[in-house]
Image 1 (tube, rainbow, N blue to C red):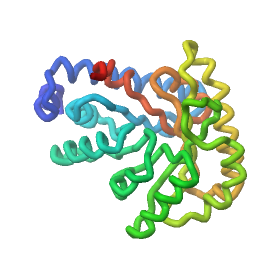
Image 2 (cartoon, one colour; image 1 turned 30 degrees about the horizontal axis):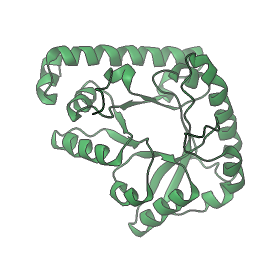
Image 3 (cartoon, rainbow, N blue to C red; image 1 turned 120 degrees about the horizontal axis):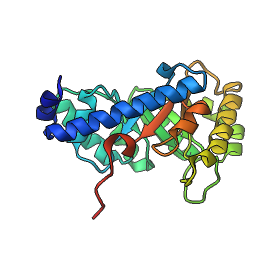
Length: 251
């Protein structure tokens, strides 16, 4: 589809589609350059576009422009956009990347390609139990608070190491790897040690009971620091503003 066709499908202006297309193309070039600089194949990197707080029309346009993976922070917003895009015959892979409460798990079953934000043993058990009862296997990442930020959710690295055996025994879930968020530094280079430590933890866990053929995803890096994350082994980068532009102010 050309930009005029995409604008009609998404319900946007041609100018809005052109701006989105330009930003998306620039991010793709930047991701490829970062991967090549790290001696990696750009095809190893999954670009997850995060359209939180923006209308479904923006997500629809991004998919029409070739973005295959979309991420949302909130369960309700993800499900609403998923329904909207499905009605438009658009079927990206959906990623839940924000904090997940146990009472929302039942709504997600069978509707995510990957849950990035499993931040506690209790939440992992809830997903495993409900998935098993539904006859499903849900792909998840374990969120680790590598930076030890009080405001961030996630496992302590030592907790992951000591709990790896019990986590690996859960039925109904497939632990695909780790996710982390670095602090919001003015200089993104300051995030590099956080990503490097997470990569070291990932490698260590891959040698233990979690080290199955499926344990191969490392989700880290957002608009401000995805270049540093790719240099440290990220396989998934979660990009919002750099693709979709500034979000509207919350009211």
